[in-house]
Image 1 (tube, rainbow, N blue to C red):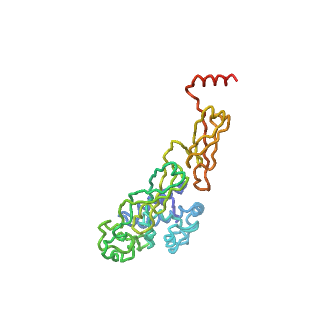
Image 2: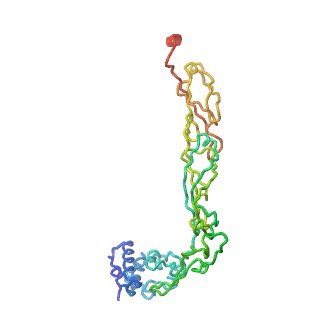
Length: 368
């Protein structure tokens, strides 16, 4: 007798792949044999239906030929045997187009995790500490030429008393009684396919296989503590306001002491504004004033740079707003060689008060 897989899952023939998947999950929860009102026969039927309708190629074959397209293939007409199922569970990824197509995540919450059912629970991964961020303020010239700073951070570090082994100094570290030193515990779980052995990280030793007989009084057996740490930071020459420095491993200690690398420390640089200079990339901008006579006749004037005071030659007839370039007097190039330039904008200062002689002189100049 032909089986109506659509009816078993309670969906229409036009149902999308997502609708089929949702229907299967709902039915699987409803009829799971471990539930009080579960039905093992029904569970097998809906599982078989999803193995066909959840696979695009098999679904097309079923729509065209019915379940006869899969007769004689074993394991509920899905073309899969027990070895196939075991391999699918161990790979945690299912099969390709012609094999078992159920995503392991679809059944994970039903069976309690297929990886664990088949005794293939993952070993405890090496953890990594959390990243942290702070801000550091520096002066304008410190950003141009670079500087070393010492900063203080309050963060999670390895316990200074037990050095992360969680035991009170002088007391023994013993094999974990719960897992017998294996770091994992084994359990037997009942499924429709029989009883399977599962494994999970030991909750008492967190996968280490050993425990402290007497916990460290400083960290209470965690191997970690909060402490203020001083860190010397080298600020590279040419860094600009808002840029960030990353110090690898200088963040929080890993959540399980001595189980992995520390997180990273990100330092956001804030450059104090300067009264005399501004940054424009690698260039430095400044402004200076000259008198009418200096603009008209030319002169050599003192100009302040980040390197100190230098003389700038003003040619005769200079106009207000003219920009002069001082090569290599800018900021150090952060990821290159050399320095930028300093761009000096000259403003011709208009006198607010003139003497009689000065007025007469300007009047004569105006008539000429």
